Length: 219
Image 1: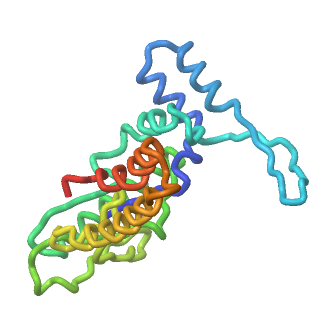
Image 2: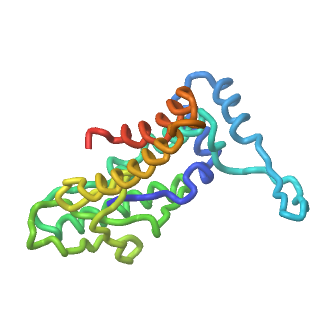
Image 3: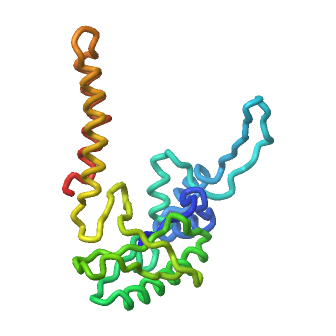
């Protein structure tokens, strides 16, 4: 069961974050300083015709793009129950799996409601991984709030496409197409005459090709 949070960083409850930081850090002055940086933020909205809204204060969330944001969010959800945001259960029969995952979803939901976080149900899917060809078309029926969540035969998790037998074939095919087009672009950049210099080509290669090929390279 692949679980996704709705606007996760933007919905961090400041009072709850303060409570968890005080449990982790012995220095109250440090916690106060961190919360001053996180909570003392505001914004305005400017439209295309240069009209600007009045200044509004941000009441929740941690600043995305900052070094502290992922660290603070990890602290905020560090006491998540034993189920994680990717919940797995193994069994030879699909029905017990459905029951356990449905129960786990209820546990996660109870935790998230306590700490004022919300699930993004359109992005959540269940999936099954096995080698039983007779069960290849079987879809798990995992429930959340009495509704069956979508099932996906080839879910994408952290940028990697997974298939039922975990061959990663579809992921590698997609990766090959992406890298082929990017290598072709580099070849044009490296053309004779007015081609880019070595430094530019190296930067482009690292950014466009190497980073993509290296990600989850063990697969």
